[in-house]
Structure formats: structure tokens, C-alpha cells
View 1: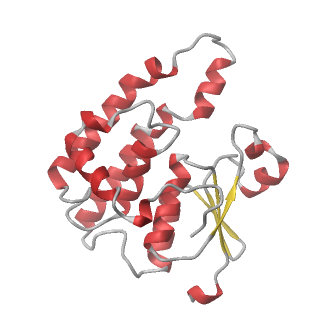
View 2 (view 1 turned 60 degrees about the vertical axis):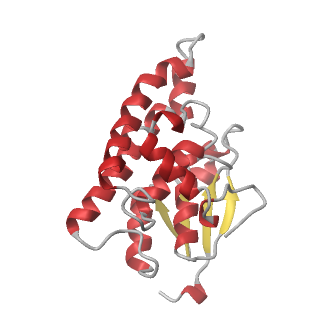
Length: 213
């Protein structure tokens, strides 16, 4: 697909870790895009308009020339196949599987346990809940597993010395506004090294409401 004719819009929310992954991917692929900020605290994701864009009523959604893509891992694989420059995945099937396992550890073993919608739902039934107390054991298990993977396979970045899709998942898992107050990277030495190296890369910069790729 010719990048000169692309109209790319990312439905996102400032500092939220899941759409931040996609923002990083787009920047690594050097794809120009516009950010459309969905105000999650005000419930804009629940509107009829956004429900037609994403039936799950979550972010991210990536719109490319009118086609709507959901779920950050599916978006990553689409971008890799459609725009092969600046590879996000390693070449060999084994290495791809290792990198995917890092991504899925974030996706399945970490993200669900700090997701705001989960705690909003619980709050309907339990008035006095300590979000950090509930999430901490699950987050610790997920980050410990992730740290072990990065210890084994990492270098400057999560997988060796080249930035991969795993870095796009790991970095927001520590720096995102929705999770950074719940976990400290200092507890996980291998992840700390990677995150501090990624801090230096412009593609991983915090996305403000008035910014775009």
C-alpha cells in the first residue's frame, strides 16, 4: 500500500497504555497519522458514535482509509505485513514466538488487572475497594514473568539489541498513566534497563492531546 495516499486516524486517550502501543508502532513504521482523543473518564467511548467505531467501546481503534482495526496485537500484525519497512518482528518463527509471548504477557497477564473498566464495574457492588491492593499480586506475577523473559532474551531492548514490537508493549506498561502509579520498574532489573533505554527514543515519547505522528 502506498503511504502517500493513506489517511490514518488513531482513536486514543492521553497516556493510556493500550493505545500508546499503537502510537509507538506507527512512529516506528514512520507512518503519519492523526490522533482522535476519546475522553474515557467522561464516557465518550460509550456513545453511539464511538460504539459504531469500536463495538467493545474501548481504545485503541486504528482507522486506515476507512477500514477499522481493533486490538493492539492484531493491529501490530497488520502493520507489519502491510508496511514491511522498519520491521517490528524478528525473522525466524521461534524468535517471533518469543516476542509475541512478551506482548501477550502484557496483554493477558498484566493489562486486565489494571484496566479502569474492571474497577468501575467492581465499584458497582463494593463501595470501598483498594485498587492497588487488589491488583498488586496479579501485576507482580505478570511483571515477574515478563522480567524473566527479558533477562533471557533481552539486550539493550526487550529482544536483543533491536527495537521490536515487544518494546512497544512493555514501555507503556510502565510509563502509562493508567498503570505507572501501581508498579515500579525498579523491582524488575531487566525491564528497568530496557525502559530506560527506550526513554531515549523519540518514538516512545509521551503523547499529548495536541500531538500527532
